[in-house]
Amino acid sequence: MSKLSTLEHSPTPSAGHPQRGFTLLELLVVLVILGLLASLVGPRC
Image 1 (cartoon, helix red, strand yellow):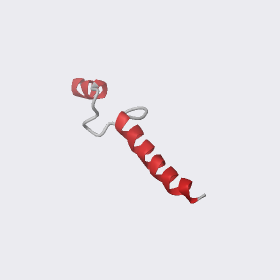
Image 2: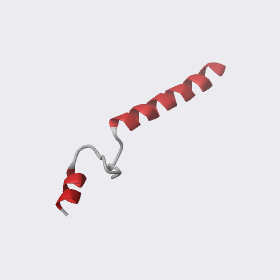
Image 3: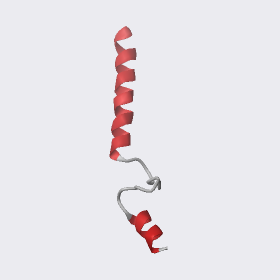
Image 4: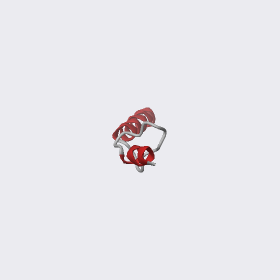
């Protein structure tokens, strides 16, 4: 059980344990996708 508790408290999820909330990388990916969609839709007016 000690290994499981140390895996849960580690800052980097390595054994397939998803973190709660969003990581910085996920937020950056979402912002890039939204930016691309906005650039595709925006200039058409």
